[in-house]
Image 1 (cartoon, rainbow, N blue to C red):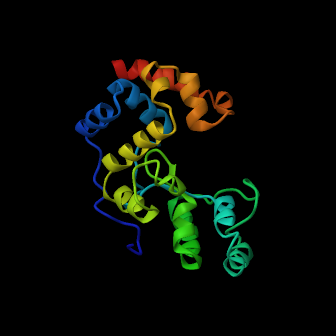
Image 2: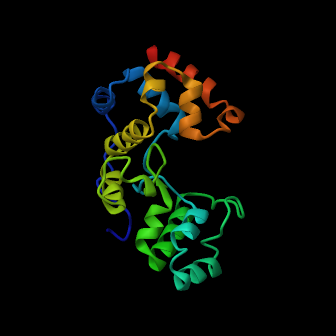
Length: 200
């Protein structure tokens, strides 16, 4: 694994979207709608690293069987049992500083506890996106937005969300992708609007 989390960082092409939509059997406009709502425009930060978010409560969970590492992580403020005890750091550099500090404690647990790329898929879901391990998932995410899009699509497939996507049942899709609180953020309405826009 590279120390700086940088790979080729290739941008997504229109061809990538068509290819991945065909791979999972959904309409291109439907996949574009998900992209528009679930990704913050780009899969990489200004330094060319995959967009990422380190989840401290996940790190706590992954270190539960390693008391020495867990104590160290808790002492450094990198792990706690429940989500939301502290706000997320502001900006990608601050996020990556946390990931790097966690990586020094337990590399695998740090990568598993981070969401990566366009779809912000958790590292712990590496099997759902079609990877052998989390390091492979990260290497692919560092390579291109096209790979990140494939992770997002494969996650939807593994999570049983393709039927909702094919039938444009945006409420069912939003619930599956964002959890039961999706309506608070109007994810279903945003998806429906983005789909109409993608149809052009």
